[in-house]
Image 1: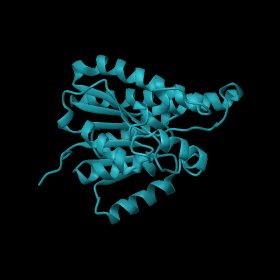
Image 2 (image 1 turned 120 degrees about the vertical axis):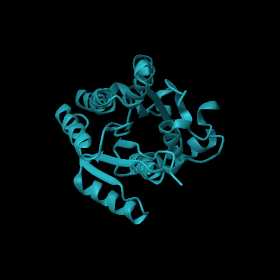
Image 3 (image 1 turned 60 degrees about the vertical axis):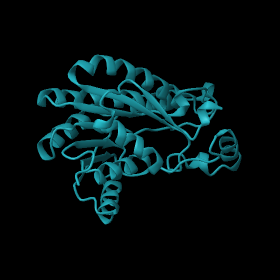
Image 4 (image 1 turned 135 degrees about the vertical axis):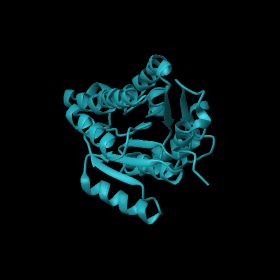
Length: 254
């Protein structure tokens, strides 16, 4: 039986671990040819070994720093020539170099956060949409935002600002790309147990505060975010665009 993403090519940034790796594995299980990118080759190789052990073989790896336009252009050229034109893009790679009061952030930390989390997403989308249009294929773009972009984000102000801007960018691109049959949606995860969020998960008072406010009284695992990404990439969501889905265990409703 063919999977829901059979014959599709999925390009996932930040795909070597955490949420990105979980999405890559889920899309691979649904029949997609999966390309994962990240900054470090060794991390990508480890992810490929782990997914191969799970039976996911149609998987390709390619290093890319999404804060660098030349890296993005090289990635897309290689993907089109080696695997095929991406029909799914998951913008997931992100950074958060500063944790503390917003007024104390340095200019370098501010610039790095916006370079990767916002400019990188736009440049990756530009390059991927160009490839989609050249091949005249329909596409689904999925931006990984955060509940930090849906409300105040104390101690993570700049990070939250990039994720809020990403929600706006998602809506604008959905309108602009709709006539080309390219859908654009976002996922806003709550607290997820990953290495990226380890400082939050491993701080008892933060976890306690989060769990008490969350309807399900717990944080998530990466696999619990992946299902929404598969849905948004599949034909099941063919009439869905411009939306941001909070996958947060009910945190944002309390």
